[in-house]
Length: 383
Image (tube, rainbow, N blue to C red; front, side, top):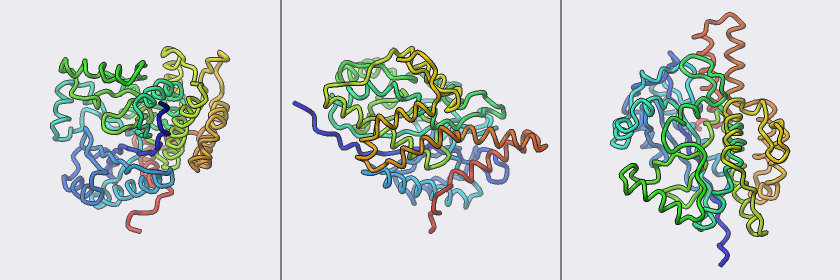
């Protein structure tokens, strides 16, 4: 029997870093009242993260990208308004330019205490934030089929999102240093391929039975079937500083899921490439962002990223029209041309140094830019 058409509903999760507005340093020990106030205002849509300097938000299940944008804008502005009362501000960014990981404090929560005990210094270095996008595919067999084809596109999404060019006060040389830190954890990277959803469940059950993990939430692949929802959860991306970039990437990902569903209806599927080849593009996205292009496996050559985006948008043209998000996906062309948050951060830093600023002062200018961009285009929560 042919599965019913998925609902393709969408949800977006973002993690933010909290900084002191005066010092521009991470808030290693923010007031406990801050999280209480955020929870009072946002309920289940805000949660603490592994480190106390982090906070996570998640939209409700959304039918449209426009609804998702409005929800995410509300979450960002509310966090900014509440944290501002304590002299703090959220940064929608994947690494802080100068924070020292060893100075950060973990959140007092059983799950995080167990993680710290199990993973030791590897997890204590996780002063990083990510963005996750859920798209609903209710039928398990269909979900597994689409899951097995999506990996090819993950480097493209990563390149569009890069926002972590610094690490502990130094230029990292990567546009997404976050991924280098995250990949030290077990059960990360590109996902495995499974012949059926049952095989996936049996594989996870093996680790649970052995006592290695408690559930599938401890699998941190770039893409995974969610353990909580009937969704495919895309996790490869950095946090986008500009909300318009977040929504563009979420729209493209949603359209890709539907495009692969359409192919299935035509008895077609996306060609499967080796993990080795896709990992090369993942590295290029991590290293260069949108600047140096990715490998076109069919042509056997590096293709400029702008050209790849044009091809991608043509692939999902029907789906963008179906979801009413043509303008949102087109923004990817602007990102490809003008650069990502990582490029803007580096430009601000280099301009400040060229103007005679000290390295710490140049880092402060980057933080000020991030504070501003996190709320760019967002109406304040109090309005």
